[in-house]
Amino acid sequence: GSRVARAMRRASAAEASTSDGATARAVIKSEAAFADALRTHKSRLLVVNYGAEWCKHCAKLTPAIDALRERWGSEVAFVDADVDALPFTARAVRWTPTVAFYRNGRLVDECERAKPTQVADRAWLHACHDPDDGEGSSGRK
Image (tube, rainbow, N blue to C red; front, side, top):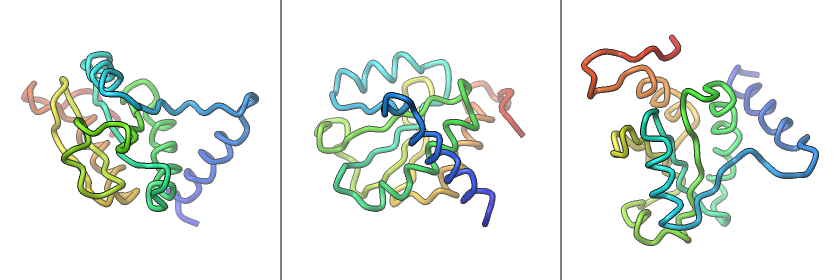
């Protein structure tokens, strides 16, 4: 299998092995919680995975997002957002899954119908380069 597939299996196994059944995934289910996430993670890249419980493609993307969450640790913030619970914030989301990238509280990029490789590439790009500072930040290479 590929490196991405192995990472996805590891993330799934790690999630399944938590002692209390809880996941490390933060799920945003209110407009106030979304605004709070933008404020809380303003100093670093925030990756928002817009999806829904009924979305089969979203479920397929989740292990890849979890693998990225594990890889980037505290350098990049990852949260899931329930489009059904966020009518204002998710009004521009036409397809699920959509993964959006925010820096300094501002949308800088998004992937509609997101695929794992797209999300990984764009997370790396935006974590390593802040367009506002004119230089690349000290992200992983």
